[in-house]
Image (cartoon, rainbow, N blue to C red):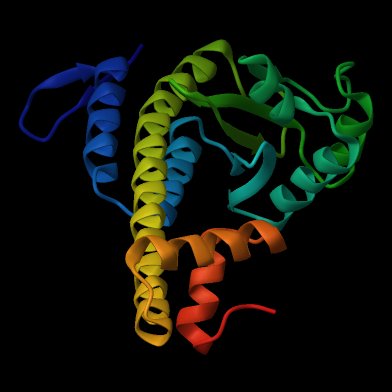
Length: 236
């Protein structure tokens, strides 16, 4: 590979240069909010493999959703996979694999999806699974308008970047879940306080009232508490 010159007179191989870029990306991702992390990951991936457009699918409640896209064509490509229930991005998530499509016009896998995206101008595809120790997070999907854009080397680069991204996204997900849990407990505590003051209940009795309403109406306990705090009355 060609050498990449540095400003201080030192040279690195292209692989070393990429390693530095990935390390810098990992540093930028630390402490970023979730939306910023997605944007950083997508932009870095598109730059690394010279993609024309790209997107990130994330698995939420067992279902893949478009979490970040660079272009309306990516949104349409995602929709076509959701409608068909099949495609390289969804299969990358399910099969724990990376898929390269050299040309959607001649690709025999996922023929309906490939034919549809070829019509809207997508010819090359690189789909890489995002995963954490707890399972699939989603997929990083990169597209080009000309055939033959992506090689095995691009897949390796994309996989390294996806590994950095997965760590950052998993950490953000854990932080978000922890924040929701803390917020939920705080809301339940406020609702208990309202019930205790209004009906002269103790802590356990107030919690029992909230839990009963939650179970009887099949509503999450946090939502019952939120309704009580916001309206000062229990849901009907």
